[in-house]
Amino acid sequence: MPSEAQRSIIVTLDADVVADYEAAGDDLSEVVNALPRMLPATHRRAESTAQERHAALSDYLDRVLLEDGPANEPGFEAEVQHFVGLLTAADDGSVR
Image (cartoon, rainbow, N blue to C red; front, side, top):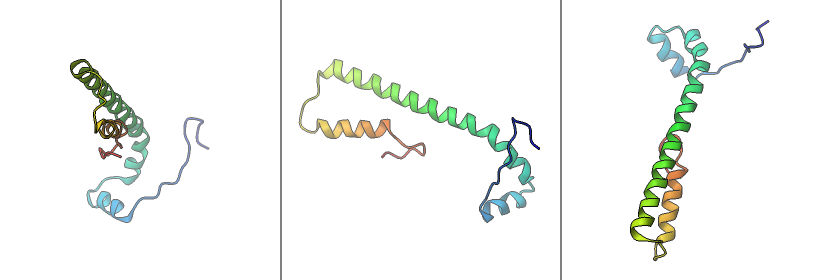
């Protein structure tokens, strides 16, 4: 029986992924067992990147406000939506 810190799970991989690892001579069990150690770091990096992107955009918008004053010209709403899209960019870099 696994300790409380361990848990048994079933992982399903695409056949081509398995074939690639096997062709490279990698131990698939070691790769799968390493996943939990890699995932939290990946999540933290993505969160940090999103925070950095948000801070940079916030700084930019503050500069624009100082330099140009309030933006209430035609087309302003489209610009706002563009920046909202940047703030909510998916992890793969695409803009929603």
